[in-house]
Amino acid sequence: MGKDGAEEVKEFPQYFAFSLENRIKPRHVEVVEQGLDLSLAVMLKATDVQFKGLLSEAQSQSQAQTVAAAVL
Image (cartoon, rainbow, N blue to C red; front, side, top):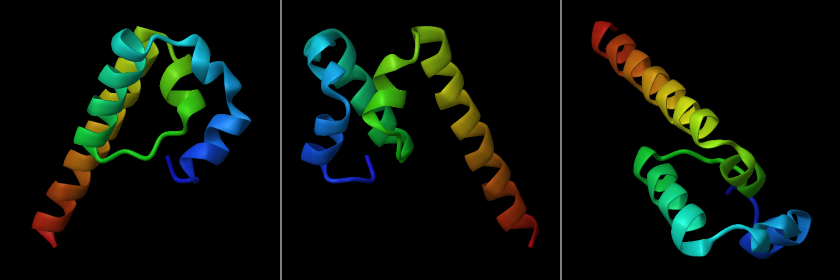
């Protein structure tokens, strides 16, 4: 969440339609653990399959950057 949290919620009021315990918290934890900067809309509107794909893609990019840094 690159923007101010209140501003982002204002721009994405559908946030309140999602389950705090079953969707918002678990996804937020995964995003924070991976060090990603996803908007609320992207984080919450993605299906479970799409969300896992986003995490996998980000992890692959991170690993590629680590390998590139080690080579240089």
